[in-house]
Length: 330
Image 1: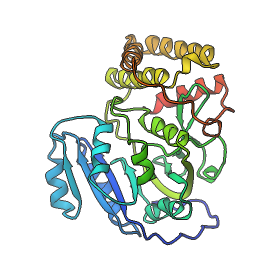
Image 2: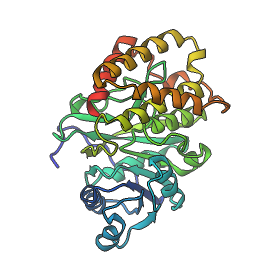
Image 3: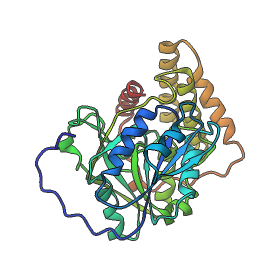
Image 4: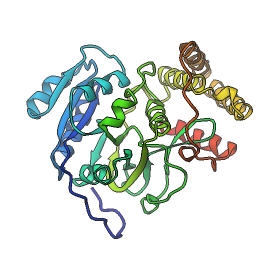
């Protein structure tokens, strides 16, 4: 990988704790192969846990052949991202848990730099990595951020790598491609919500961790390249329905439409859904939201996250711009 811009590199704190790296997979073994090859070059010891979510391309057998030291968890059927991750985390016992998409290639010191902050602060529940786009000069994400309607966005996406240390917008927690968690925090939060199959589940976990009192930070020097595998199909009907489900579900779980942000939320959701209908000529985004809203019926409402977990500086118009940018990357 290309080197980043010159800057003073902070020292790496000694890491004595055990680390579990959970890699969920569903086909595309060529991505998994390259991901594990980069993982094998890391400068810190760790345990690799590959969770196969019903692949049809012999991924489990190929992982066993090429990476005999890896722990393989086979689900036997496609159970969804959140279930796969939770199973992978429960298969380990490391003090730190790192979630890693199989379409990510880490720089050799990424893992060590990513978990180092957890050793320094017992109140720290999670750490966000710096994910780069394929050009290795542009940021794909430095964690995730959320506006006042709890819409989530890849933080600093599209900005040059030199801006990875910016403190705004507010960091809510790690983004899904790569992030580290203290196992104690993960278990107290009960991991990912499996009602959500995919999309926004990492944001939901970040908000619940912050509400429970855990802090978060980013590790700007912990870098990797996020290739983007489009597991659910780029802008496919299924992808848009799943994303809509997650949005509708979380709107109800967090009581956003009963908050002071209800008018802004209704306006932006109407604009987003109307745009999707015009562009794709179907109602899958709307259908997903309705299904997610219904799925949350009768469930206890999550408390409103603390103000320091929300990027109140993101205006309604900026939120709409960020949503358009997000759609282009899905």
